[in-house]
Length: 139
Image (cartoon, rainbow, N blue to C red; front, top):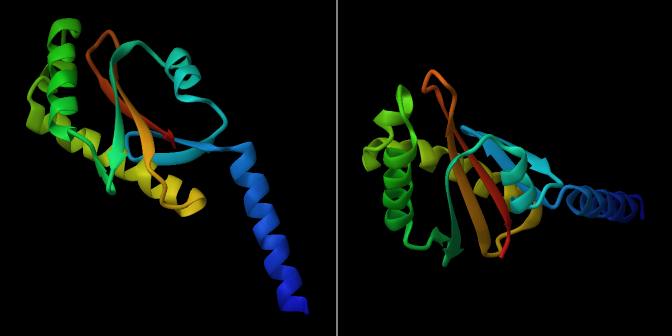
């Protein structure tokens, strides 16, 4: 009986946590739960190049196309510094892969394995220092 009660309390606590924080965001590869929708998250973030993708069969659908499009946007938008290095899709992909892995793993650990909407943002400061961030929500 005690095991059943603990199980029910754990399940209820998890449901309350996932309801209060139904999404996950990451800066670089550090993920945390958030109550912000992807739109609110983007609006609260620094400006930069972003893309929104979906998962299908456990993978990011047309990932290479999203990486290339983001690199093209950085090329057109970023004036200086590290951001310029990220116009190379291979370099950018390594950074985006880290952020993607962080939000997907964190989301699935708390919410299960459903298909996801993933939003990625690459931003930079006046010195060209870059930040790669990601957001995960249910599709």
